[in-house]
Length: 199
Image (cartoon, rainbow, N blue to C red; front, side, top):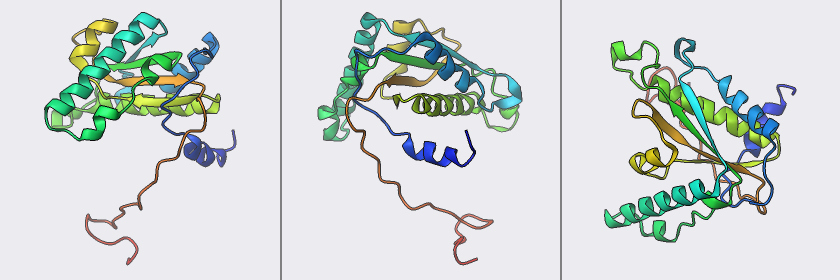
């Protein structure tokens, strides 16, 4: 890839919420996506991540149920009403789900100065790398965090010492994926609040 192609790739990546369930990924494609995640920057090269590759329909069904519980919890606690109509069919449609887990004990030196989120930051970079790799291979992706971790943990047997960064849904998109409007950047010069454009 030419470096200039990266900018086109960044614009091509979109959040896909409808997948062709009948088009599975090949094992080598799954390995390529995960290997891309493993190239992400991380504190002290501790590489805090691990992955659960999910293709079993019965597991996806349970994840769907966890998603429905999350929707109801939002509504029960006065959350926005649109959540009730938010379709999570993609949970069972996507041929591949990858759970990205991290070990919070592998967050670098941040614990010494109130920066404990190093492992989550590394896991997030890992997740984005995987999304970009999947996009390059022609797949749609969705980074999903709309769930109660306590509900998802037992479904995929996540140990208590690990945290769930998110679930990555991957598959061929079912139709065109709409683009999200990007807001104007908020940029300051040297100090917060100093207008960058006026410098």
